Image (cartoon, rainbow, N blue to C red):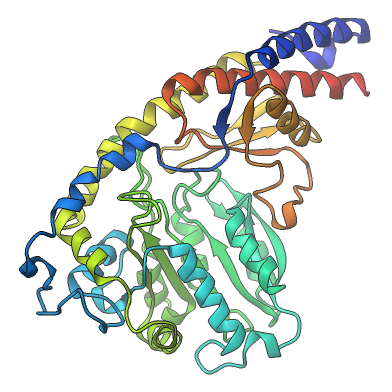
Length: 426
């Protein structure tokens, strides 16, 4: 196996010429392969087509509590949908508000509420001077976009193998201007990491200086397992916070956007009763009632958490071969050369890849030249600034299995070219 670090300049120059010849061959093919975002593939969306057939008669629109789901009202959602989503994210029905179709939109709303009206009677963020937020990195770019939109200062917290760097978190929350932390605790976007019990217990027991500090617990991938016999299980943050007499510290978010239909699922926020009563003040001004027709069709289709789990096994059968193909190609082409490292998640939607320092932006550009679109280098960091310029997020879900192999081969070639170029600069 070639070792670029030990090659002479003449050997590296010859190697680069050979690699560039391969690059030109790919460019002539004029490929258009896309691994930018974690979108469900059409075959995954097809799995839920039967949902459109469950509401036929007038009686189908009536909930167990005799609520007519076609009408206004019932701000927190119908009981059976609160039960379904609560079982999915570890909350009791009374701890849940089903608020539309997008957990990202709920997260935005909760931050906006804190900015404009304040959290549980505290002064609005916009009247408190500089507001700071802890961002576990690499992380979800859309979380960071919310922060940029509101002008909130983001502070990087490294994601370790079992969760955020908790010693750093515990130190940073002593600053009263730190108002929150973004967490994707299970099969994290983009690394696939799941938080261990020690990290979750320490998060649940945090004693921040700011009374209006909250953990924003985006449990987006809680049922998104890739392997039936290898799956991550995490502690219930709501339970742990209650044990720590700290139940107001967390908001939990979840949705079925990658379970049923992307953009047409059901989404929720789960929290303490005190937090929910505070959030309802915002929601009742925003709308007279969320889409209960969508709520009841999800309940009638999935029935219960076991129905969701059975459905997600079908998703896994579509997703798993794609992840395995990416890893197979990377293992063959770059793994043994030690010019890239990458995660092997048991669930979620992404593989996190690290090139040699200073190479990610170049790899992204080379892939684009050869017809492969990736999420921009640095996207998984606040302000799009990866301090090492080494991280790339790989999203295998949307392309077909036939497209995954050439797309990953092109990625591997780009990594080799960037690595040789780096070695030649020494």
